[in-house]
Length: 98
Image (cartoon, rainbow, N blue to C red; front, side, top):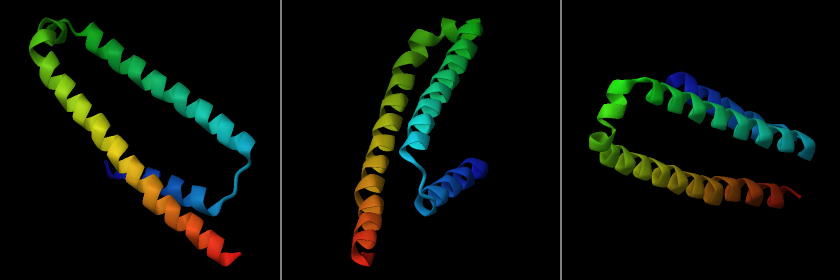
């Protein structure tokens, strides 16, 4: 888990410091979408290949749905505040420097 957080923080730091072209950002968005779809496909494959999981899918489906729903809502909530406050502070700071 620490590896993922450190990787995320390094990426954020590079994104704040470096000024990449809009072409790089377009490629980055395409790669993010591709790898996210790949991860979801692999997760679906692993779930589908295990028959015991499929047998209990109805029983665990409701709980999994609730956990997934709150995970997504939490992620969106955190992202909203990061974009609103962190990027807002960065924009304000850059505006003051000019």
